[in-house]
Image 1 (spheres, protein in one colour):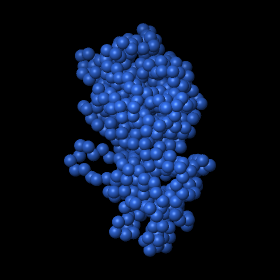
Image 2 (image 1 turned 90 degrees about the horizontal axis):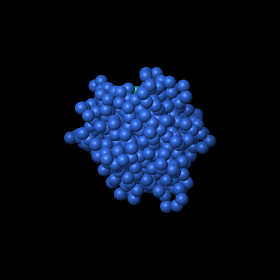
Image 3 (image 1 turned 45 degrees about the horizontal axis):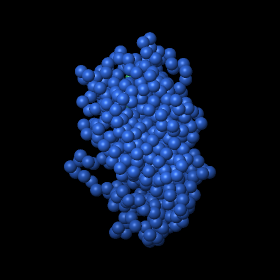
Image 4 (image 1 turned 120 degrees about the horizontal axis):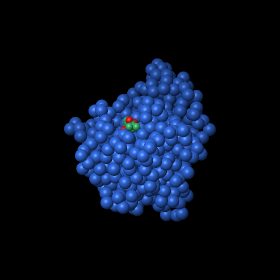
Length: 491
Ligand code: BES
Ligand code: MN
Ligand code: ZN
């Protein structure tokens, strides 16, 4: 995918999107330019015949000459526009034009966003447009005999391109790449995407971006005393791998952050085997790992001034003669003991050791991203990510940025009362706490394995993979929270 910025007169695409507000006569610069090109065909259609009124997501396609197709698209009522809605609209427009080689979007002057009126600028719009357009255009065609050619260039035009807009264009472009990278990795079969495969990809990324890389095999994991993590992977013929990549800026880092991604390359449930229907999409249980590997590429490409550690405990949760069992008592890296009462609550066990590992990194913040609990789907559905943690200031800061990044989050509590749910007679805790408050008990469990007082946990079980398309993203992997985390790290 190519990303361009140009002045309006230099528009180079064979399709363009013009935005109009509902019942608003103000025309954008691009509209006026294309209107002239088309002998006032645009204004005739919109303002004389009123073919569309500019309601949110209303569109009309008008061919204005042999090469250029224009999609006029409604932003809805000015006072009701949000960043999320802009993102949904851009994704939808890009999708409608996906058979065109290139698509141009404009930056309009007077965004009047109801969610963030004061601080929304053309720069913000630039990030949103690049990421959203690529979301709309995303398809995984690798295994289709009949491949469609898709748009390969996204252009943004504006007559007053500032340095700030150009910088935000970079951020948007690399964020969109990170999302595409993660989605491709999730879409690929678990047959191919084994712990070893992801470790290989991590090594390639490290090489390309000049990152420090530590990749541990089974014996080395044992030496690190990550015996809880090892237990989860022991039922699979595909051996576990533990990966740790480090990006360091040239100068003293502004802050140091560790990102952990849950990396179960297939979650069959283990001896507590999942029913067939629930197992169907469990190749996506490494979405967290895919996300953090996408993010570190963006952070390195953007030459961020933070130090970023990316960590994942990669393994497969299978049933077999060598699989870990209910009743097993596991000792995590920090010495705490876990009684396994359900082998399908494996993610938290692998994350426990990954969190302990991060205690040794001397970072300011630890954030994990994980497809952790079915319970978060019951609570929040498929379009809202659960946020938990032990530092309210960090959570508030993150949720604000997530909102500005067009992603929905909701905080779930971690309270001391939850301890009783996980009480074990034989070990420090059980790995599950029954059906009630499943997302919170998982959060409480994790909190036992970090010494950080700025630890945050994102439960993306509901949002990482969609069975049904939503207004912005097609069914399948979403790359959820990648935009938000990149924007958070850069902020
Ligand atoms: N990977 C699943 C969680 C999940 C569920 C992700 C649905 C995506 C969609 C996780 O390992 C799991 O199996 N969790 C169990 C925990 C339970 C046994 C306490 C669950 O939520 O059912
Ligand atoms: Mn599971
Ligand atoms: Zn899982």
